[in-house]
Amino acid sequence: MAKLTFHGQSTFTVDMDDGTRLVIDPFFDDNPVADIKRAEAGAVDYILCTHGHYDHFVDAIPLARETDATLVSTFEIVSFAETQGITKGHPLHIGGGYDFPFGRAKMTAALHGGQVHGDTTGQFTTVPGGFLLHLDGKRIYHAGDTALLMDMQLLRGKVDVAILPIGDNFTMGPEDAAEAVGFIDPEVVIPMHYNTWPVIEQDPERFRDLVGDRARVEVMNPGDVFAP
Ligand code: NI
Ligand code: MN
Image (cartoon, rainbow, N blue to C red; front, side, top):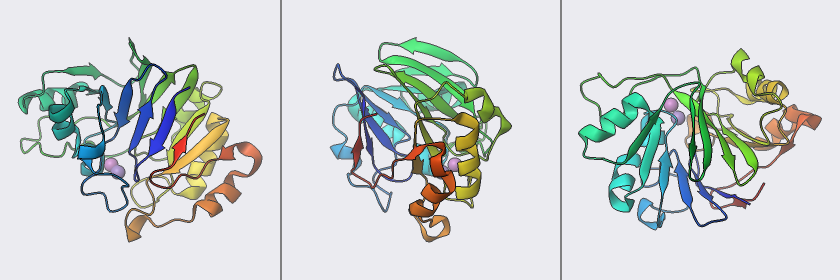
């Protein structure tokens, strides 16, 4: 059973049954709440990036260099990484999925900004996304940064664990995220993208109350491990 470790903001490590390790939206060294530094991420096989913003992407290229992991993201982000010397990349795009050795990864729609951190040309600006992952028999949706979207209704019945931003200001706040839970109907919801900075301070217990009996809310602190 895949084990999820939360590292603060939107960063998760996934340890699969066969030893494969994925990192989603790596933000370690400058992340004020991260439990580990990038150098402690260990042997990483795949890096998945929902979008190119600093707090999701800043450690992706260095981590790919240091671990020889394969970068999985939008075509534009993988193309930008190539200009930075990263040769192992797998470009996807919204609505498209691929059966990787670790399982299926499909990119989902997100409504957010698309600038790519480090791209001074602007030519790699892309649409942001999320990931619907099939890992060790569980279906895990990492929403990335997004507003509440009607498109989330398309995920209904297709998700066991939904990982949703609740921080407000840059993404959905707790009310909209609770409405997203109603759209998706997952078994478990894990809140993310809050309490990293004062501007996105939220009480996850209030989110739990808003979700009510629509799903089980698993509040994770940086360093916590969850096996769905
Ligand atoms: Ni963002
Ligand atoms: Mn963000």
